[in-house]
Amino acid sequence: MFVSSNGFDVTGAKRFGFNVAWIRRSAATGVPVDPVLPAQMYRLLRANAEMLGYGPDHTVSDLSELPGLL
Image (cartoon, rainbow, N blue to C red; front, top):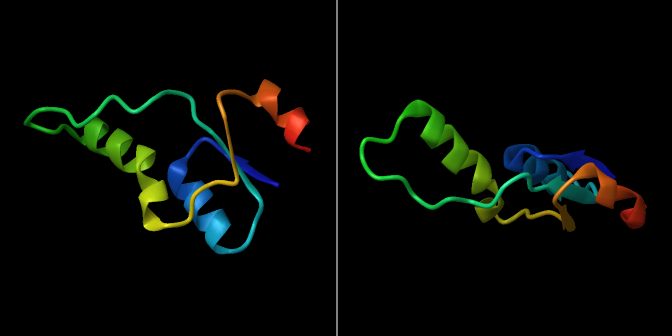
């Protein structure tokens, strides 16, 4: 099982056929108002990588939930 908290890593691993667990550390906070600073843009892109069509098999909030998936 591939495990990551980065949406772009999850998307890539799923695309290559891995069983994937995404550690979603925080909920998306929505789109910020202008101007969008680089750090905000990074968070938005990182949180929305699953929109590419390769979402995780499992979503957990922290590492303590992983043993139940294995």
